[in-house]
Image (cartoon, rainbow, N blue to C red; front, side, top):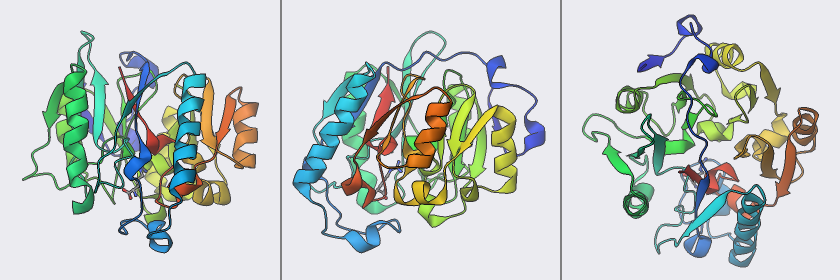
Length: 298
Ligand code: ARG
């Protein structure tokens, strides 16, 4: 069912009615060797140009990797590239998919800012080596698409949640839904601090999502509440300063999240999740945390 959904009344199905999608068993991470803050493309970076503690970043990156390993996900490590300081945020260069025949496919991104455009090619090489069929958006028609920064799979289902407004063009979702033959529910983003969907929306399992409500329109919130029976809300301090909604639940049970989001962690535990807290402060300076630092794959 390929369909772009923009209003609650179009939601005449439940996620459980849609075909299942195999859980990803691998995560890709890009090593932070060349991570730095050299330019400003989001509000967080403004105060931190030239201000990354490289040794701390390396240590934090390893902490995130080890937390993922604790969840029994297999982590693939890719070396970063000189001159591409944001490549470490490898949620953004692609959107992978597994079709009904078990074939692995991927749509490669068109990054919004010129600084990040060259990150796509080295990530595409990795997919080629992993046996993925690769698809490309028409860059003459689509301005930008930032992969799993904005396009997020509903856990376990062939259903996409598609953020747009800052980094991804709404128009990209027509091609994406047709290519993968899946529906996408579009969510307009309203605040520059929550410029990617993964900064304010974290689907934890098929029925539970963690969000920061003020990042969405009324329409968007209605669609989220219609499709998830449990909607956990991160308080402003956790969402803004600790990127709590940029957590990751790779296996439906463990949630890897930036440290000290106390209120959010309490809610997660109340709902039966096992929380693994990590420190990602150096990466938050650049506007990203746990979710942005990995790509799920098969
Ligand atoms: N500095 C990067 C940028 O602005 C951070 C990307 C964070 N990634 C994410 N998926 N939210 O593009």
